[in-house]
Amino acid sequence: QVQLVESGGNLVQPGGSLRLSCAASKTTFSIYAMGWYRQPPGKQREFVASITSGGSTNYVNSVKGRFTMSRDNAKNTAYLQMNSLKPEDTAVYYCNAKDPYLRNYWGQGTQVTVSA
View (cartoon, rainbow, N blue to C red):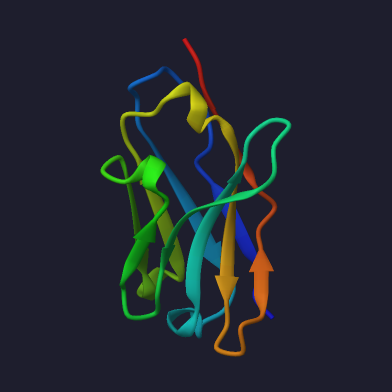
């Protein structure tokens, strides 16, 4: 089992940037596929981005060109760099880890608010 701790959420103005971090407890972090999901107010949780153990990334269309997901296996940490933020990016952002047996693990979430 792996524990995930997100950080980096904040209040930011439209057009601003934030970097979210997801620290994992497992030293076998490198074998996990990692992902970011978000839950806007009053809506269901949705996929944002993912990165495989090999470093391949995938993004939802609404964030392509603005968000970049990366990982540092030496630090057991995944990141989500968010640029050109929009009010519709406001949500609780959750980190996800998927092990080779396709079991899912979730962090507690971090709030991102984009508002003037």
